[in-house]
Length: 191
Image 1 (tube, rainbow, N blue to C red):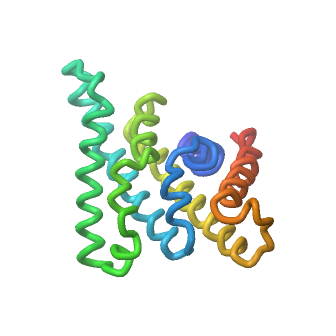
Image 2 (cartoon, rainbow, N blue to C red):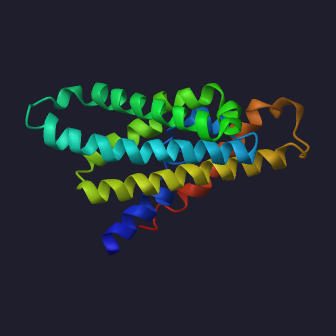
């Protein structure tokens, strides 16, 4: 049980998918202008991360290894992720059309979101069993949501801040992101 809790905390905070592993920077910058959008994107991506891990781990362990097809890992994982994103897109279009419209092109970009692919590959490379992989994916998903919401909060504060002219716009976003990354780096010794 302690091992599971460690994997959860480590994947969410200590090895945060955005602030420590530097994955998913495109939606991190593109979708954090408003907290609602950031949270919605975080939840949609988290759902895909969990589903992708639940599907790719058995495919890899039960099909690809016995058939010696490990070299196709990235290709097959991307195909699985693309299929799952289509499912999420269809679900959001039918059930939450306002969120679907607000996400725009970023919803389709979940397919190429390196956090989703990174988490699935990390589960294999860390040699986690199925349960540990799902916990790792859940922690990574929680970490992704945390990073999206925290950055949206920082961006809302930046709207009213007096930012020097040279740093206005995108430069201050990268400065803020780097400071957040440094703050999360402080958790490295936690586990």
